[in-house]
Each structure stands twice: as structure tokens, then as C-alpha cells.
Image 1 (cartoon, rainbow, N blue to C red):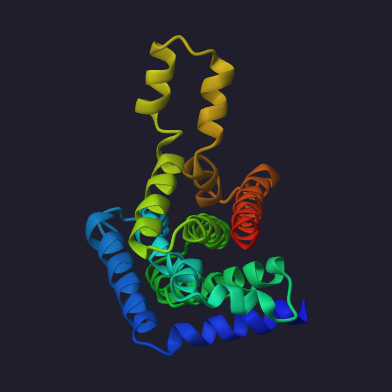
Image 2 (image 1 turned 45 degrees about the vertical axis):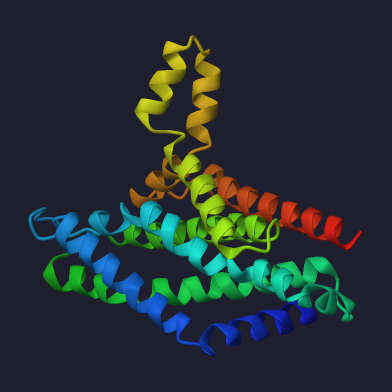
Length: 244
């Protein structure tokens, strides 16, 4: 655990060593504000809730999180420092988890900076705190899942652009899996209901929506944790194959 935290601190510090982190935070806050108040019609809803805030997160993260994760391993592979990293007295899993936790902490910081949204809702009305609390938990878990996928694609290529595009496509597929147009196509093709339900269950939005409503279901937590664990495991397999 100590080695993992050392890697995490080193990686987190590298984010703020360049203007990239600050640019990302500004863009993230501007986009969340724009989509909440303008596209989400926050004031026209006339209700004290953050539904118009959380509903855009799957789409915002789909583009912004891969921008954070694409450099996790691609840059190390391009510069040839990944071999140097693994010659240190750490295991590959410690390095992978350290880098992942650093990126996840950075995304968590970006999410914490949106807390003025919560204060605004409480100032304007009397919202139910349950959906807001579970919505933030779901958003944080979803950001971690996107980041783990981005780290996985980053380990597969030295090119950050390819890593970014690949992770965006994978995240998009996970978002669209449960949408009615997709499930309707499966039904038209004669797919059994069990297969359609399985496809819908793979959707990130399907599991995030219940958290937006204030429901903290164990199945949703298992889904996000399993997605993160699978992507981290795959990242380890890819990096170990490169070392062989």
C-alpha cells in the first residue's frame, strides 16, 4: 500500500506541474455549469433538485475523462520510462493502482469543485438530500470506471490520440447499451428478452439513473466496482505482456 501511495502522490503532483490540470478543471466547471443551467433548464424546471446537473455527467465524462486517462501509460510507453518504472522495487499492480488512484483523486477534486451547485439548490429551495448524495457517489464511481477504461486503452498504445479515441468509443458503447433504440434493434433481430436485459444491464446510464433518484443499490455498486477491477486487471495483463 505504501508503494501504491508513493506512485499516486508522484502522479498527482505531475498533473499540477503543468497548466493541463487547471485547464481541465476550468473546462469541466464551465461545461457542467452550461449544461446544468442552459441545456438542463435548471430554473425553468421550478424544482429544488440537481437532476439537470447529474443527467449530463455520462456524456461529459465520456469526453473529458479519457483526456485525463490517455496519458497514464501512453506517455510512459512513448518515452520508454515504463521499463525504468518497473525496475523499481514495486510490482506492476502497485504502479497501475497508484496511477489510477491519482487520476481518480484528480477527478474527485473536479467533482468537489461543483459543490456550489448544491449550495445554490439549498439556497433556492428545500431539496431532498438523498438523491444529491447518491448522485455524487454515482458520479464519482462512473468517473472511476471511465478512467479505468482509459487507462486500459492507454496501456495498449503509445499514441495518446489513439488511446483517447478508443476509450471514447468504448465508453460510448457502454452509455448507449441500455438506450431504447439499441434494445429495440435487438428485439427486432429476434433476440431473447434475457439477452436484451443483459445488454441493458451493461449500460452505465442504467446503473447511474437509480443513483440519481436516491437509490443506492448494491447491484449498481458491484457493477461500477467490477468494471473498474476488470479494466485494471486487463491493464496489468497488457503491461505484463509488453515486459515479456
